[in-house]
Length: 373
Image 1 (spheres, helix red, strand yellow):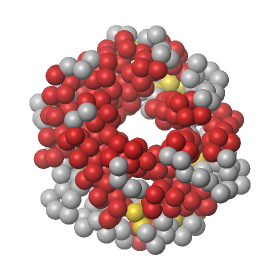
Image 2 (cartoon, rainbow, N blue to C red):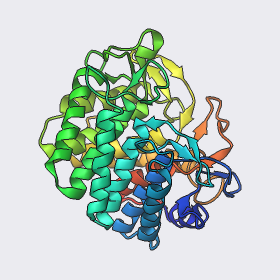
Image 3 (cartoon, rainbow, N blue to C red):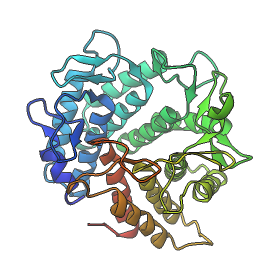
């Protein structure tokens, strides 16, 4: 983070529009014509607000607040319709007008962290307006939860947007102290326990039909090890804030990801099925950051591991990150995704990965006092 935070606050920040560049090429130059996703802007707002709070970035408050004001002026209803557009072009014109639940979840997260810098009624009101859109435009007609977006991309329903709504509501509860946000998180926890979690396999399912039944065919068996770890971290945070017990889920999720999600090289696969069979052998950066967070959360919760020392276990995943992903192809950058054969799967550096890397290192430092270079 010593390289990444100043780099993305400087080279990665578009001074003209007070927003973050979406992508850089492998030489560290912004790809100027790349559309800017609302989600990616909000992730960077989170990073710099949190970095400011930790004292890790002298530019953190400036970048976070300039970006949040730019987000509001450029991404909120620029086409006259309700809600946040999925992406805009660098010139501010709408690129993708979809109203996407995943993106709205990250808007809530970014606003929550901006609120920690500036606890203004304006930001709280905007969060409430965003929640109102989620509750009306994006809510499923029956069986609970939300669709993926408007218009819907396909007939599937996914757990992933709900996971990030869970995260965002917990962030708002921590920022504001208002119990209604924790209650919303509790509703999503109910979906997790009754729909997303497969108690027979101890696994997290990804894809469902409209009645929250596992999707037909292979799609209904797909698991992502990274999401298993991410839910472990979130569930333990929810438990800490609410007093609810989550141990029956966290241990199973962690064990499934560790048992079936790692290749011989120690890196985590993108997808396996509930029985453990490999589906997609490519390997992204972010699942390894989620493993670090999960291990830190288990350690903080006092969970005793019979197989490993938590500090050493987290350090092993941090080593994977430093050896394979972070600090390349330039200082402050990363290789986001590898093919199964170990070759890079993408030829650009996405800004959105900083959210994962920063949070993992922040959690490792907070829990273990182990901040990597």
